[in-house]
Amino acid sequence: MPRRLRYSQGVTTTTAASRQHTLRERNLRLVARAVFEAPEPPSRADIAAATGLTRATVSTLVDQLVGARLLRELPAVADGRAGRPAVPLVPEGRSMLGLGLEVNVDYLGARAIDLTGATVAERVVPGTFHDSEPAEVLGALGRIARDITRDTHDAGMRLAGARLALPGLVDARAGVLDVAPNLGWSSVEPVPLLALDGLPVEIANEAKLAALAELGGPGFVSADAAVPDSFLYVSGDVGIGAAIVVGRELFLGERGWNGEVGHVVVDPAGPRCSCGARGCLEQFAGKEALAGAAGLPADAPLTDLLALLGPRHTRPVKPLDDGSGRPPAAQAAADAAVRRAGQALGSALADFVNLVDVHTVVLGGIYTDLLPWLRPEVEGVLAERVLAAPFVDLEVRAARAGAQAALTGGAREVLRGVLGDPAAWV
Image 1 (tube, helix red, strand yellow):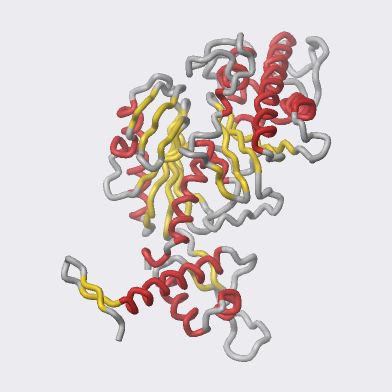
Image 2 (cartoon, one colour; image 1 turned 30 degrees about the vertical axis):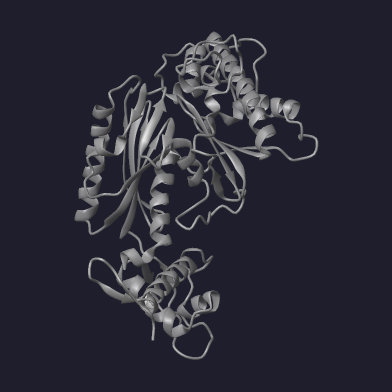
């Protein structure tokens, strides 16, 4: 006879029943992952072969996942084997959603993504949030999120939760933003200020969520086979953040506060940073610093800087009228600003590479578009200053997750949680 356990609430159960329940959760997770991670839509027989479960067990679990609208059956196809035609299985679209939210210095964003990886709703609102009031800004973002929640619910979809990306030191376990120098925020509990009652919300650092977006969908299977297992991701905007990915997992350190490459000092005699130090990387390679050095307003869009730059992969020796309509002096100033930024960025990245022994650098945010102009200086400094440079292939590449990548990474993290515990949604 199995030993009985009695709980204080008066509910009686058994260890056998507990084991059975745990086994069902495990098997649902195995079946779901087998579908999400398969290179081609698998059948029930394929899943049984991949997981070692019996076909009867797989069929029961698949029916439950289809009923919960986590999986969808495609039309049957003949597979050349005896018996009925195979029914391929794929993730269900426009059913379960993850919501990515973000507060950045110059925009608020929200993006809802379904289990197929498709974006089903999105809003990005430009703004200027230096030294802003947390309650006001987060209240505005909460209204955006509630609009998306209402619209997707009315369309028959359900939100599993949300991740909020923030540009600063985030204590995710305590739900506290410790400091975000460029926002002027410190010791803020953001989730209550969103007022998203009933929706589970967790917070994370913007660069770390953007790095996760490079790895692919809910099962972290990237459609791009060239994405390395380990890399340093750098997110460039007004501030500059970074994330270290090792073996397709984030390296977080003791508190998850690593990666603050924007506050690596590249010139001790340089300008004062918002963090209080002098000569931080952000003062040379941040979006506003670049705009100012190029003679543009601090809040100028990146397209204005790109319009001033000369042809890609070239460097004007002296200001020349190339017939493009760009003022020669303005082109020279923009070129010099990007050259200086590339040298400063290369210097900071060389320190990171020397310390963490990761030899692929992925540049996201504004650096994705600026990379053709940044590359010569960044790669030159890395080759000069990375001790292992003669023995390894150092690669600097553009991010591939698209604009506002932290929104995508946050939404996918929610869906990764669904995939990790599908029993909670069946």
